Every structure is written in structure tokens, then in C-alpha cells.
Length: 588
Image (cartoon, rainbow, N blue to C red; front, top):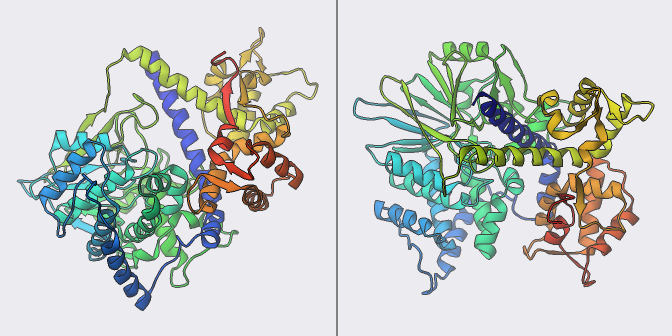
């Protein structure tokens, strides 16, 4: 059992390290994505003053113009909402129905009006007849939300809830989760509460699936929904305090977190926090697209509470693994709690194998509510209940479609984690080989285990126990040394495109997710097709931003080689499939 538990921990560590590396890559490119949005869409436009009032009127007119056909059999909402409406939504979503776009827009519009009346930091109190339920990240996993409601009851005056951010992305039902939470907020504005998470940001949504989900489900109305959601995000409260003793934020704190300051500034100015994380992180980089009325201090205060993670060591250091926020130690926690006369910090933001974790001598609790986050069976979800004694009571659960033998299922989770790690190795094949050969000047193909681990970490920066993992990733020689090229032996990109040079194939594979985001920005009608010329321009923009040395002729050859039917258009799904890494021996 001890060995099985250790392997579970390694699998979770691999998934988490790769996730954080992807977030870091996202943040490093966020200013570029912001530039693309500014120049290729109107999604990033905002209204102020009279224009804003006109926008509200136009929205209401637009909603009235959207016809709900007789063939629509989903919920029909009327405002103000009632409990009957929330029940109707829950039943519809259980049956995999969608809410009509007209009602979605009306719901978002009403939600924004309610959120605008709320302070930056919500203050709640318990009584001897009440407990407050606190939920962490849901990430589009509707089954987890429905299971929480089944086990714990629906939100009501007698059963208040706080959801601590990251409602969207990754899972396939993010819009349904938002609709349910916003509907309950409108029915019970004093008993259902929402904190903003780092994924309540449209640039994060571009990469992690929510934008794609909305466009797929709502098509012609998708952009209007996404545009209105940006406003809703910007008005979400930033923190909650319970009984003046418990602070709840999505990510964490830093040594400069100032709750008084956070409570006073205009939070709706922070529309796209992801687009400025890196400039705050590296002061030599100019801060892009920051409104003139917003200060760097305001940005940093928000980023720190949305992105930071606790660590066991004292001090406060930049969170280089994620690319934003900081790592804060027990001393940082103790000082902030003492300064504001608090007892406890509750946060989310990190997947935990049991759904929760207690750290910093009991002063920090992490709560994570999305079970099976990385793979089916990878982790439990949890929520906690706080009574007037402020003693947390944890409830764990795990959504399961069917039962499996634990050992067999654990092997699948471990296999999936190692598969993701091998693909990560393959995506940086050239850099890894160069790093290996610094230890192998005579090209023997072998280096020591310590040298191999150092070389891999120097390229991937995943902070994993490479020496322990080496037997699962590479072949070992009889003398215990590592045959370093063997970590690439079983992988290849399929189908191979002979006209494209290997270096370009590797580069495109590494940045395929980023290219998909850019493609979705350029593909305004979301047809799934762009012209060869648009593809060429996409790559040139991306190439100039990353300073990648790929010549125009290579890009032209690639574009024409994946235009399979020679109609001058590229199906981007086929493009992504053309750079799919597979095991050479699968399905053969």
C-alpha cells in the first residue's frame, strides 16, 4: 500500500507540474494574445460613461430581438428569478439541455447589476443555527456541483454557500456551472457568494477551453455572451471574511498583501489580470494594456491573491512555476493574520489528492472541489463547512460513472501521467539532446543518472523527482548509466509530413496550443477554416513574438502540405491532428 500511495503521489506531481508549466507559458504569451485580441476582434472593447449606458440599452434591445422558437424545450426564465427557475435549470442541465442564448444574456446582465452593488471584500457571519459551506475550484465539472448539492442541499437562506473561484475552463460544462451559480446568486444574493479566481479571465479562457465551449454551444451569440462575461468577471468580489476571523481568497497572499487597500479600489478596472502577470513579475518588461487610472500596486495586489501558493519554508518568493503570484511561507501567513486579527486563511487554486490540505500549522486550508481533475480517479473533491466555532468540517467525495478495481485504475492514472510527461520531453527534444551532450562530449549516448536528471530539469523546469522517475522514462545501461536518447525512442509525430523539416515539426508541436488560440482569434466566424494566407500571417506574428528562426519558405511548404484538398483553406483540427504525438507501437 505504501508503494501504491507513493506512485499515486508521483502521478499527481507529474500532472500538476505540467499544468503549472502550461500556465506559465500562457502568461508569457498573454501580452501577445492581448495584442491579437485588440487587433483582430472587438471582444476586448469596453464602454465607459454614456457609451456604457447606451451599451446596456442596446443589450436589452438585442435580448428582446432574440426569438426563442417554439421548438425550444429548455427552461424559460423570467426576472426576477425564483426557486422554481433554479430547479428548472438544474433539471434541464441534468438532462444535458442548454439554456437559450436570450436567457443567458439576460441572466448575465442581471448578475452584473447585483455584483456591482457588492464590496470588494464580502463580510459574512455565522450564527448558532447556520453553517457556511465553502467550495473550491469546480473547473467546468457539473457532476461535482450536482453531487455537492445532493449531499449538502441546495443554497438557501438556511444553507449559505461560498464558491471560491475557478468555476470555468478544462471541464465541458463551464457555462452551465456559471448559469446555476448566477441564478442562485440572483435568488439568494445574501446567501450565495462568489470569489473571483484566476480563471475568471478571458485570456485564460482562450487557452483552457471555456471560450471554445461557449462558441460551440451558442455560435452566433457566443461573442456577445463572452463580452458580457468579461464585465461580470470584473465585478466578482476578490475576497470574503467570515466572522472577522477567517479570510477566504482564491490563491493566497504575499508579504505585501493589504486588505484595506484591496477593499477600496475599483475592482472592475481589473478585467484581464492574466495579461499583466508577467510584467509585474519581471519589472524590466513594460506593462501592456494597463488603463492609465490603474496603478501597478492595484494590479499586483489582485494578482497575488489570485495566483499565489503556500510553501513550507518561511519567506515570500516569486512563483516561477506558475509564472505569477508568489510562494508564501508560514511566517508570511502568521504576520498577515496577526495584522488583521484573523485566525485562518482558506484558499483553493491547487488540486489536492484528498480534496483538501491543511498547512502552516493549521492556519492555511486548501479546498479543491473538482474530483477526477486530471484523470478519472486522480483525486477526490471536497468542500468544508464552518460553524460559529470556526472549526472546519471536511466532506470528501468522488464522482464515479462505474466502479473499477483500485489497483488497475491506479495503473491507468500512472500510465496517463507518464504519457503526458513523455510528450513534454518529446516537445523539447532538441534542447534536451543539447543538454545531454554537454555531459557527453564523446557522443557515447550515456550519462550518469545525476547528469540526466540535472539536464532534464534545466530544460523543463518541472521540479520533479527525476532520479526516481528515470526507470519509467529511459533505458538504463548495465552499469547504471542512462541511455539518454531512449526517452524519445517510442514516440513520433503522426501522420508524418515529409515536406516539413523536423525542426519545424517539433516547434509546431510545442506551440500547437498557442497556435490554436491565435487561430480561434483570427477565425472570426468560427468555421474551423482559415485561408493559407491567414495561416501564414498567423505564424509570422507568432514567429516575430517568440523570435523563432523558421523561414517563410518552410511555413509556406507546411501550409500547402496540410491543405489536403487544395482549396486554399486549412482545417485547423486537421492541422492539430497532424502534430499529434503517438507511441510508435500503438494500434500497429
